[in-house]
Image (tube, rainbow, N blue to C red; front, side, top):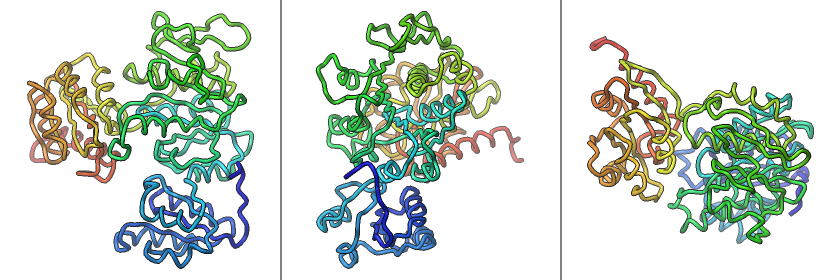
Length: 466
């Protein structure tokens, strides 16, 4: 495969998976005079709206059992990130010798603009959004997409070589890349996640490492020196996996760090020109809660510097960044109790980081569908930092067991969870929704979970019987 993709009139293309990414791929491909097919392993009766949308883009829906009829004349297939590469449909496509690429690979091959790509276990969305904000604040044109919520394929349409694309990419998306080569690759951290999909942490890490697999010395790699799995990619280990020029950030001091903290100030050590360190901004001016967001800010700043943004412009740009929804988002303060929505926290390590963000008593709402990750480390953090726990969802009993002697109650809806949390909280406390689990046992999405939390909090303001 080459870096470019020629779409010829009459090519037959199969899109596998009719979620948001798959439908976006169909919408863009519909502009290229090709024949479109779509398939999905869900029962057709569950797909009526998606099939109607696919047909509106000129695609014909084919049930998996009927794919043999079209695969001999199919040019290639586009795989949505939610569909595992080992699924029966994908295996059937491979058996027919039809090339398969993911949605971000398709977007890359159609894109004329340079790409900044961000991955990691936690902090991806915040860092991606912040990079886009910094680039715009420095006078550049930037589009933001990918796993952050709007498919990357939609953002690249019409983008020119003078613009920048900032893409959040997941391990699922990176599994299917072939030529994908970002101008700047950012690897934030690697912690246990998706172990219901990956047999081991090593295999999960390998998927993350793919973000820099195709880079060269004309590109930049931004990495976290404080993460052992990422630090092991540094040149000093004789590791040839990172071929790009390297920029490293750390919350500690290091001779190899390009960005670090000195006396509470984010400091940049230029890799070219005058080597004297440049103080960029105090941590107190980063408009986000928590030490983990200091790391996210340093990663975003290094990516912006790699793009060419002047250091002097970045301080004002980062100070005007607004926190993203459902990520330590302040919802309300009622009777002296602060309510915080961190619904996008879907792994235990994210909850631990959230708990470290507050120096006041915490009533935690946590639980949901486990991703196959143990709760021992989370339980230790709860025992140290949580006043009371409201456990929800399928993993409620497991989290309760891991949490030691912390007072625990269970709730069976978000409305009940907020009510129980309010009863447990006192003025000066934080009620923190930071589930550490997937949402799909009780909610349509992490966004739905956060919105139900906000609605339940809002109802606490209303007089009884109103």
